[in-house]
Length: 192
Image (cartoon, helix red, strand yellow):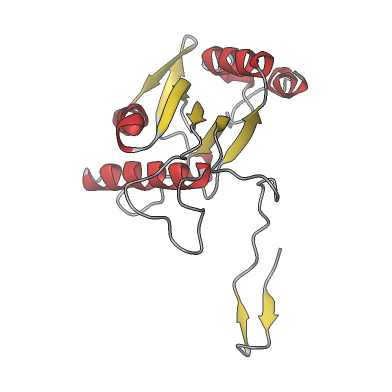
């Protein structure tokens, strides 16, 4: 990734970002998805983990409230979910209609009714609420983009539910934890 020159515009343009999405997959189709959304610079601003339990602060509480409000304002079904100090994990079921947000997706962004539209609208809603309370008025709340895993069978669904449930207890070895010790436990989830 780097700057490139657009001869038609006779000027340099912004760097091209490499997409981490599957290029031929339709993220607006029905299905189950494991989503991870990280705080900007992976700062621990959503709360902390004490004795293996996630304890959210005011920002984390807003994130929880907006997540659990999602089925009301977006066409999705929620499953396992946790707010960690610097990221959230959740399982989202989308029907074939898709996950519509509060407003249409921008033309250059994710397609309306897609997983990306849901995540973008969720991030925007939480950011608005957090900034309205002046909790992080001049800093971004979320890292750009998000991570997703398409859940293809019940075995994977059960393993991911267990991973989410145990994430606070495993914070000491979590790869998102800036003070974590090295462990292969998180990587083992993808072997299922």
